[in-house]
Amino acid sequence: MRQVIAVLPCLAIASLACAGDRAGAAPLSPTYRQECGSCHVPYPPGLLPAASWQRLLDHLPQHFGSDASLDAATLKELSTWLAAHAGKSRRAMEPPPQDRITRSVWFRHEHDEIAPTTWTSPAVKSPANCTACHAQADQGDFNEDRVRIPR
Ligand code: HEC
Ligand code: HEC
Picture 1 (cartoon, protein in one colour):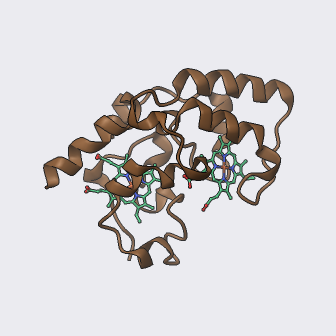
Picture 2: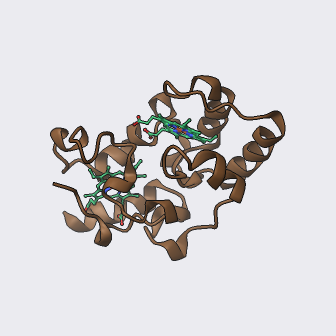
């Protein structure tokens, strides 16, 4: 069972987070890190398809209840960069509901052992808060050997 789970993300997500390792992650564009990594971790671009990234960019003034607006030049730069680094595997190609990584099939599968109450606990607050359990998420490191669920 464990083996099946461990293998799944490699089918699910493009090379980037596949190894779950910093070494396997492409470097993030400084603009992306700055503009999309201030309120939450800069999510690895390989975790969503290009269509989802573009839709998110198109609606930044109403971004999950936040105003994340950017100027046109920055938007264009991010659009190009995200399209180039978006998930390309078959599973990652399907835009999840609300274009949320946390609602994609592989994410739910990978995290199905986590109790519903854990997601909303004070230390975690939201599944989107990757850093709560993946301490090095801002480095693109999601390796399951370094996961720690806060209690
Ligand atoms: C002003 C703060 C802010 C900025 C800047 C921001 N976001 Fe967000 N983002 C949020 C909030 C709030 C959520 C919802 C988090 C939650 O559900 O717990 C969110 C959620 C997301 C999600 C969905 C996470 C999930 O549930 O899978 C994605 C993807 C995302 N943001 C991408 C981006 C991108 C791309 C940028 C840069 C263009 C960006 N964000 C900039 C505040 C921000
Ligand atoms: C409440 C804790 C928690 C949160 C929050 C969380 N994860 Fe995880 N994640 C885990 C656990 C536990 C595992 C290991 C599952 C296993 O052992 O099979 C895991 C596994 C993974 C894996 C597979 C890693 C591997 O080496 O196989 C990826 C990729 C991943 N998470 C991405 C994310 C992303 C992206 C976010 C935020 C959008 C996130 N996780 C939020 C607990 C969490």
